[in-house]
Image 1 (cartoon, rainbow, N blue to C red):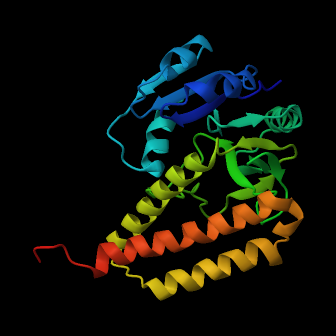
Image 2 (cartoon, rainbow, N blue to C red):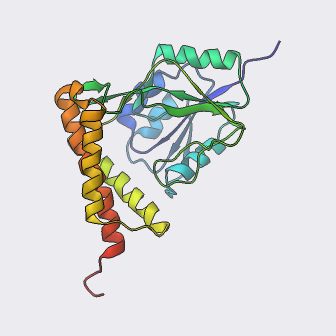
Image 3 (tube, one colour):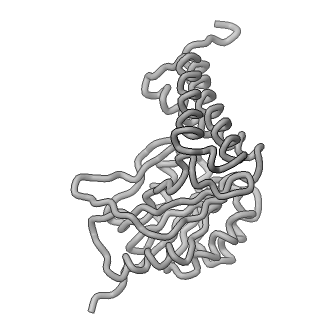
Length: 259
């Protein structure tokens, strides 16, 4: 009789003491928890170790993709489940994962439906749900690419993608300031990544993409059904879209005061 493969829950974190305990409480059934920290100054390490996690530090930030690669290199288990500190595994999702491990496939990666809580309600429209993300796979099969931001699991030829049931709850933003800071960080990383590839942008492009973002989220993806939060989120997403193009324009098309 074959034995069940072992499973590691893996997190990359920084200053997540406020979120981490609640996250790890939904992972008390996995065989191993690996936490890779990028230089926390709060109690993140103490919280992680109190939950029995194996804790590592890499404070020379290489970007999201490479940081995930480093974290995966620390995993001892057969399978990897990726989760962020602001996410929670529901009992239904746990059951789906355990069913996979009871009858494992060596050439499949699994996506989970993510349900986000934003500004006081779960967002079920705006194109935000089911927001499937690839999070579960055999460690030996694959891993993340090198992207600075919006990193993805590498899907090689012959790898199948399958869907799990059960939501991954995502408590994404504490407040508006948290949204703006987080969004600005993503915009800067996106612009840097595009600049490295020799890409440029214009403010007109930014305005057009921002308008398209709002129309898609609020109208085509029925964001209006999410009430005031849907309207706010659609407007903020349009703003964030403009900002990333504006940042790329500034980096590639403007000069400093002495140039």
